[in-house]
Image 1: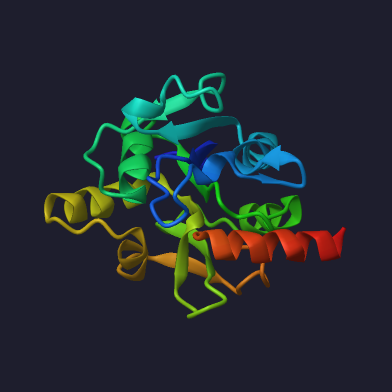
Image 2: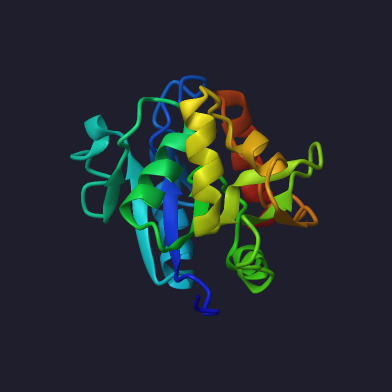
Length: 199
């Protein structure tokens, strides 16, 4: 068996229904740019290949149509659908999985994750700054994580965080507020004000 780490691909999760936001979170602009495109640039610069994870109904969406896509091949089960679909498509790759709704995420935070990567565990992840648990949507999932994710899917368990808790992982300290996400109009307004104060 080769000691060479699996190639690192990027997966930008954009298939969520954005129900609490009441509009497509990926299209929300911060600092004048849709957050999907900002996250895409970060991901593409740091991985060998990058893809946007989409539901079938999003394939022709103007924001996503011009980017390489992996279409969910699982039912609407949340982020696990995107991760499993990517692993099925490129089973020999490790995946840097990223949510598209992290307006404070930066290059240095992702670089820290990549530099700490251990290809001999299931995943390399940050701890959440809110509860200390593994953060699945800014994480490197190694090929060996697929078996547990798939088994949990077949058992009707779709939470990637709970899969990480059951897995062999490297857990890095929370990277400050870099992984704060935005789920509601009220949170979006607060984030806009925060970014303006940093400008």
